[in-house]
Amino acid sequence: MGLSLIWYLKEFARTEWIKKFLFAKTAPLVTPSHFRGFPEPTGKTCQHALFCMMACPAPGAIEVVHAGDGWMPRIHKGHCIRCGLCVEACPNGVLKSGRILETMEREGTSLLFSFRIAIDLELCTGCGNCCTACPVNKGIDAQMGAGGHSSNDEVIMRVQEGDIVVIHEDKCTGCKTCEVSCPTGAIRIARILEGYQQPVQEGSQ
Image (cartoon, rainbow, N blue to C red):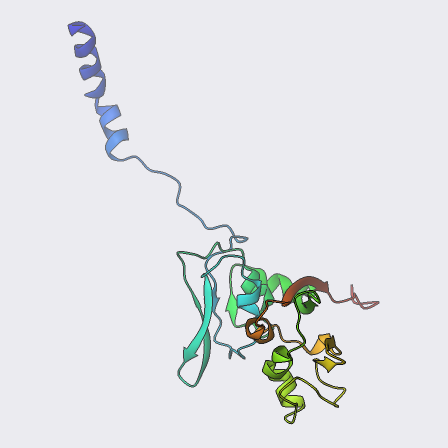
C-alpha cells in the first residue's frame, strides 16, 4: 500500500499535471439567443391592463405597482419561471425577454384575452350584488338600482325576473369584482387566453 501511495504522489507531482490543474480553462459561457431570461422593462408606458398578471402561471411572480405618476410591472425573481407569457400578453410591449418581442413582430403573433361569466343558478339568489358592484356596469348605467335592475341594454349583466342575465359578456374586463362581491359564491369569471396570428397578405412573401 505504501508503494501505491508513493506512486500517486509522484503522479500528482508531475509538472504537466500541476499546470493542467492550476491553469485549467473552460469554454466561456454564452447565453443562447433563444434563452428567455427574467422579463425586463422596455421603457414603454404601462397602461395598467393587467394582462401580464392574468397570463402569469406562477403565483406571486409579477405585480403591477405605482411608479411615479404611472404604473410599472414588478418581477419577483424568486417566483418567476421565465416562461415569457407576461411579455407575450402585454398589448403595449412594456416587457421584454429574449427574442419574444422580435419573434412576435416578425410572425405577427399575439395573445388575446377573453372572459366567460359563469353563474351557478342553484347558488344564485338574484340579489344583484354582482351587477351593482361591476365597474363596467356602473360606467354604463350610473342609475342602476340597488337590486341590479337596469333598463339599459348595454350593461354586462342585470337582474331580470329574479335571475342574473348576462347580456354583453364581451365587455367583461376580468376584474372579478362581481365574483368577490357575491355572497353565495355563485359567480365565476374564467379567463381564456388564445394565441392569434395575423393572416398573411397575398404578395407579402
